[in-house]
Amino acid sequence: MGLAFWSGQTLILGANTFPITATTKVGNTWLHFLGGDEAPPVDATVKLVVDAPRRHAIERHHTVTHILHWALHEVVSKDATQKGSSVTPDKLTFDFNSAALTPPQLADIERLVNERIVANDPVSWSEVPYVEAKANNGIMALFGEKYGDLVRVVQVGGQPHKLDGWSMELCGGTHTRHTGEIGLFRLVGEGAVAAGVRRIEAIAGLEAYNAAKADADLLKLLAGKVSAQGAADLEKKLDQILTQQKELEKALKSAQQREASGKAKDLLATAANNVLIANLGDVDADYAMAVNDALKSQFTGIIVLAATGGGNVTLMATVGKDHQSKVQAGKIIQTIAPIVGGKGGGKPDFARGGGKDVSKVDAALAEARKLIG
Image 1: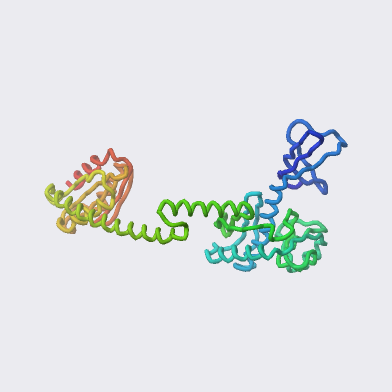
Image 2: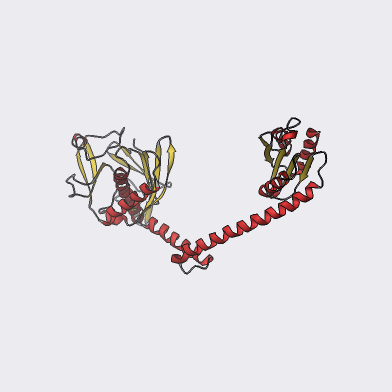
């Protein structure tokens, strides 16, 4: 028995409709499964209605999958072998063996596919003996698939039914009649799904149009937020904002260093017996490091600092060369970091760590004082 799938069809008998929930093939017979508890009477003549918009969307994604396969061989390698694919009304996925594709390769693939679409080449299909198809090097078949004596070849380009197209694959699915019916094609993702296997995700037709429109609307929205005169002016405005941000960050860093120097001066007054231990409070790790650097230039003893900015604990220890025989910075941090629910370590002269439990900072610093002695 073949795999079942939802066909998007409905049976109609007079005023009654019977949705088809699944379709599967048993031998040469197609079975249609109906939803609900009722069914048409035996021998009744019914009308079969296909969800045309859904079917056409599948056709677009299926035909463009063949074109994508061809483009992949053109851009990457003919050794990029198909490992699986999925076609729905919303998108397509295509799995293949390859290394990760580069941005230029992805751009070339997308361009080639769209070039073949606008060429509006014919799409045709023919049933031929399997031995004949197998002998034709231009016809691709999936490795491991089982085929009957007759196979269906879907051909894109060339003369219809002449098996001279630029894309020819054994396929039993539904397709467009010309490539131009696909409309627009867009790649939306490429990544690994298994060792040595990559997956491309793409959209075509109305789905691609909707995505393009969403991108255009987003650009318009962003342009408005930065007071740009339309999308064309957006890049210039963003460059200006990024330049201003860099200038502000530079000014902030200078101010932070000045403040850290002042804080270090105040802390020096609290040092005793070549030991300086302090809780800097709600400041970030960069500020704590700036204070530490300012202290090192004036104090050669043992420094242990803590900061609790952003709800996280930052710990750092600095031990001057003359005191490393007594205690090492790495040992201090390794001992006190677990108290705040974290870890850390480093070299004899400097180490840092952190944790999440802000309430235990003073306890950690008290342990550092006991360790130093």
